[in-house]
Amino acid sequence: MFEAKEFLQVLSLVAIPDVLLVVFVSSVFQLGSKIFNGVANNNARLLGNLAVCLCVIWLVVLFIIDAAQCHLVFECLFGLVTLGLLLASAVLRGISYPWAATIVLLAVPPFLVGFLRFKQERTNYAKAEKFY
Figure 1 (spheres, rainbow, N blue to C red):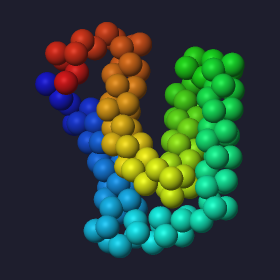
Figure 2 (cartoon, rainbow, N blue to C red):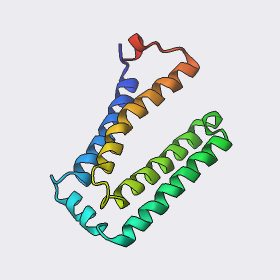
Figure 3 (tube, one colour):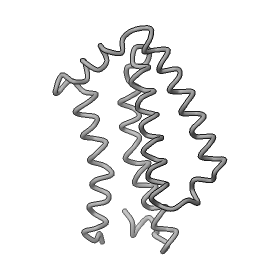
Figure 4 (tube, rainbow, N blue to C red):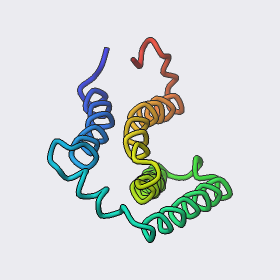
C-alpha cells in the first residue's frame, strides 16, 4: 500500500492547489472577488494576452531544451514557472474567462500525481494498481 512518504507526496500535490483554489479564487475569504475586480480592466486583459504568449514561448523553450531529461530540481523549477505563467494568464484574462483560474487549479492535482507516477516509473515500474 502507501508508505508515509508517498502518502505525504500525494497529499501535498492534491492539497496545495485545492487550498490555493479556496483561498484565492473562491469567495470564501472574499479574496477571489478582490483579485478579479482588480483585473477587470482593459490593461489587465492585454497583460493576460502577453502572459499567454510568454507561456507558449516558455513551453516551446522547455521542449527545445528537452526539460524532461533535466535533473529533478530543474524539472520542479520549470514546473513552478510554468504553473505561475498559467495562473497569471488565467487570472489576468479573468475579465473574459472568469472560470479559467478555477479550471487550471482543478487540472493541476491530477497532472502532478501523474507526474509523480511517471517519475517513479523511471526508477522502478509503478503499475497503476500499486500506485493508486
